[in-house]
Image (cartoon, rainbow, N blue to C red):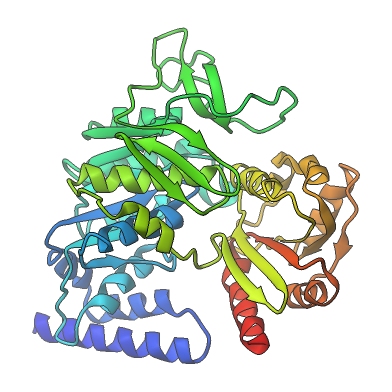
Length: 448
């Protein structure tokens, strides 16, 4: 009977997924929800069929990119991988990743699973399977009305880690909060990070830095240098807590139009913008290497990797290149600004801010973003859009940056395709991502 229920769940999920795709909707979470209703233990059964190991990727920023890069790296090693590519990272989305990868008999043929999991959802997902590895990218303040302060997220993650047995945590050791959590959890852990200072610190930076006080003793932390936000080489003068030795240390880092660094004596190269992507690439590398993979084809995987789902995704529409990226909290937005600044050519910029439940209805975080740096991005125009476009416009007004107002993002995009400079950046927060992605795909198809 259990077998029959599993098959029915898979069939139903696949039908729902196909119907949603045909109607232009994502439908991933609905497919997982229905599958769970039909067969409540379907995730347990399918996850148990993964032969090699299960990775989960957690952290405030970089989950989707890290998870997709890890999946690509494993596939380039000839492995069969289950992955929630779309970033649907709550329980229903995780279930959907497995059921949509199963065959019509309800069986799964997979060497590994790469599963991005929302931090608050780990305690709901981990009862269904015990991951072999957790990649912990960073812990920043995010959606205060949903997550609360970082301490709440850390408590949830610690509880989940305790549920996962001897799961190995692959932790970004440049983040004191993530490092403390990994050490405090009792799980085995390995570290990755950027061991040497890359940029001279901007003394005028007003960037918000989390975790200023030691989680072990409460003393104010000191830093030898920062990379950005609270990421860097830290130590506590009170109890001696400090950044641990790095098992995977990115050296000779180069950032700009492309990214490269050395780790384990290898030169890793990627044609991406954004210094933060060094961490995403390094996290994927460290995770796969910790699992024992040789990664002989890692650079080829990076070269062929196509950013998708609005994470530095590029659309070519007529004579205009349009870059879509997610910016959903202060740390992420500041790094998006840095990435845009790496492009020295003139550009138009659209910023879309929504306040739906998934975004967090409190948009006060906009006042923690260093928006005065927009003055240095060579912007021909800045347009604010979305439900809270007036809030965004007011925020820019306070740093003397003029902006155009267009609540409808499709109208804003079409206007800049018509009269812009041919180089358009669209920065959106969470619920604007999928709809804006669909708009750009449709317009790109019209122009083909």
